[in-house]
Image (tube, rainbow, N blue to C red; front, side, top):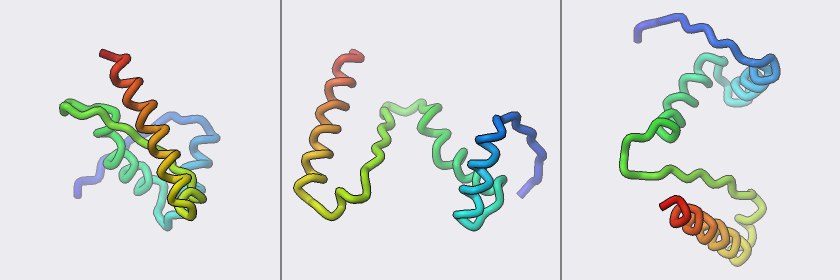
Length: 87
């Protein structure tokens, strides 16, 4: 793999968050940034006929299938309304 140096200007708080997050994953900051770009850039710059949707699901809902189902249905209804509104 070719090595190219790239400089980013980001707030100190974000640098610290990258450092802590990378350490938590067992990577260095560069590896974390590469993985984030690989994973999420396609969601931001999307030429496909798809609309990306990301849900952050509370972990405790895994323990209660009925609550998880209700939570997901509420989000699906809200997403559907938002997409129809955009037409």
